[in-house]
Amino acid sequence: MKRTLLPSLMILVLAHSAQAQASQDTQRDLSAIRTDLVRIQMDLDAVKNQLGQVLRLLSQRPAQGGVTVTAPVRTSVTDAPVLGRNDAPVTIVEFSDYQCPFCQRFSATTLPELKKEYIETGKVRYVFRDFPLEMHAQARKAAEAAHCAGEQGKYWEMHDVLFQNQKALAPPQLAEHARTVGVDGAKFDECLSSGRYAARVTRGVTDGAAAGVQGTPTVVVGKTKPGDVVEGTPIRGAQPLETFRRIINRTLAEQ
Image (cartoon, rainbow, N blue to C red):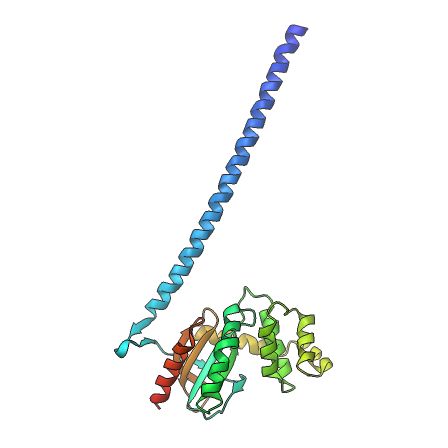
């Protein structure tokens, strides 16, 4: 009996040892796979970033005097909020997203300078178009909220507050922001819950995509012409103020 039991125990011990070793090997393999997946994701992100830069370079051609010129694009300004005179010689159309940090930077730093130098002096008409990105879950409703505030004459005040509070754009917080800018809370709540500006926000995305907008902010600078269409130079990304000055001044000189 003992002679039979001993080999059996030895077999069980060896089997258990083999299972334990296999489990350890599996854990090491899984860890290695996870490490490889992280590395692959980082490589893909780097390639995506480099590809975006290449595409931007390919869309540009050098002009005389070292000024970079991009192919002109056309876009609509129908039913869009406007700052400045409608008869200003130059129109700027910005496609933007209230959750986009680069859009917030443009709103906080570049736009005030453009207001002072061009919009308030009657040289530029500024038009805001909604382009909420799919990755920003709260941007679309925030865009609707700005239009709802606009019903009560507070569009630009709401625009500024939304960019100043990018981390607080859930519907209850949108209602708080609306009351902060001084609109009738009940009317605003009814407007936002009805979704009556959802189609206008979607139209901004559609018009932007037709104009080649792929990210935000994207700005189009062109001559002001009769009608609701602007054709001009696209400026993609958070570019320095001097880039806007150069293109605006060049467009003004062409008048």
